[in-house]
Amino acid sequence: MKICYIVGEIFGHGHYGGFGKLVRVLGKGLIEKGFEVSVITWRRDNQPEIERLDGMLVMSWPYTVSHSISSTFGHFFQYASSVALFKKADADVYINFDPNLSAYLVPRPRL
Image (tube, rainbow, N blue to C red; front, side, top):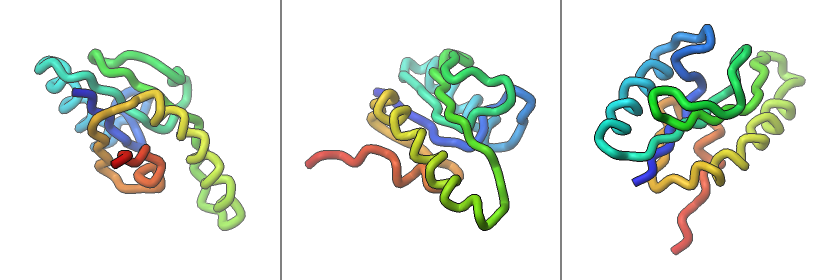
């Protein structure tokens, strides 16, 4: 089974938040149990676009945090750039701890 975490950070690269730490701990445990785990996150500082951490495939996309009202459209365009990563993850289950616009970008099942 393929599991993909959607999170605003991954524990590392100078960013050490709670959701990022939770993903590292849970993801590593699932890898040990034989699951295939990927992570889609915002790219931080010198973080590569694609890397392996604790056996998880971590894919990141550039995102610039801005609190300006004029940045609203930029915010949506930045999220739109992550769509290809969801296709690449091709997961059976997507888990989003911190609901945000990414939840709407997850491919919908075809019934």
